[in-house]
Length: 391
Image (tube, rainbow, N blue to C red; front, side, top):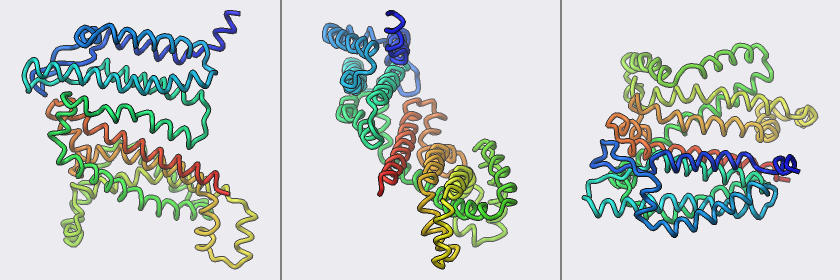
């Protein structure tokens, strides 16, 4: 009987809860510092309880513990998992509210220059809440589109409570950087667009040619694989000298904005990184096109170009989107490193914070990059689901 109960339980949930409890008891929830450059003194969850009203928090924690126990022993109950998702969304918002209220009271009690930064305990517990919700979403067994909608709605309580954290250091950094954050996001998107779109066009043509020329496949894939092994910073550096030389030899290129620093080496390097997943997925998709469809199109008198764009590419699109999704997400992350060669973007904010030892400024640059990557991933998942449901 006990073995049957263990088999029906959810050990993944137990692990996440144990990590959250360990973070709550052993890691600082917040840090109080006299300015943005110092790490400050740790503030634990117990300190927040004592200041903000421990009885109310204890009641909420008791209700949460009961729900977690039920979800642990009854992981197959969809209603319990749905309640767990809602609870984790509320818990994520509650963590932010607790941090914001403590920061507000600390700032008013001391001085306006004091900084309240989010500690490792906050980030760990927030990550555990997100992972518990993801596990519950998997167990609810929704189809792709409803699951993606639910994942997006998970952050709604947090978004509605963002204003309560205006005294936190990360909110103060946002206020200081609000005039440059918007242009940085647009610059980041520009870098991704200029790298991925040419990679998509050229990758499609290369994959189409590989279906007809075996020698091209054998020669090109080893090169693309080697490019993937080169660190991004090293590849940026390798491109700087040749591009600077070309700008000197051909002044027209320099006037067009191509030089050893700036957006040029960033776009070229990211273009090279994006080629492999696009070419590989496009080739796999084209090879899965039924021979009967190709022969029928040729019998109708279609040219090679018409065959590619009207028959082969639409049939290969579901597989192609997998590689394109990987390329866009990868490029969105790697574009941050391009700030080291003067390309700008969100990486500039991130490295400004890194070089000035301002951790919250680093986080302010990282969070939009993560959100952009998640949005791109979600977009392609939705697009793939719509294509699969197309009659």
